[in-house]
Length: 126
Ligand SMILES: [Zn+2]
Image (cartoon, rainbow, N blue to C red; front, side):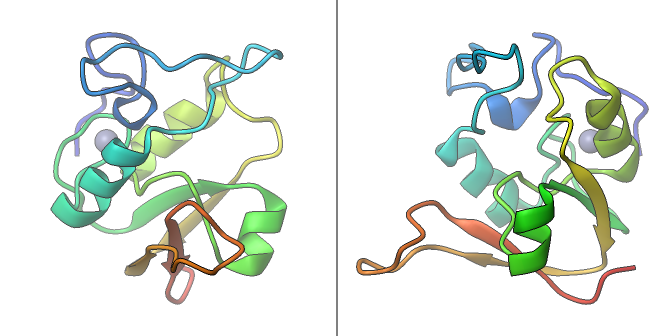
């Protein structure tokens, strides 16, 4: 696991577009929504949403309490150290909680579902 928290551009991998440009921040100066294509890449290639390096275990996620309670997390999987770094970063959502798991399922929305973005369903929390 690498200690690097952010990508060379200074923005977490999954929060940039394909060109590596940071996505727009929220009005409060927080990270905006992660880029869907990058989130999918993290899920299918099992790479970290912050540093883009291969994931080990435990796998860490940052979720709002609501996401945690629904077990439907929008932010991508991360190394534990990367998630801890992002949690402490100025752009972090203050409501985020850190979750640890050994496995997850990537759930893409069906055509008629309320949820329109892919989400991560975590298996047993560690
Ligand atoms: Zn990482």
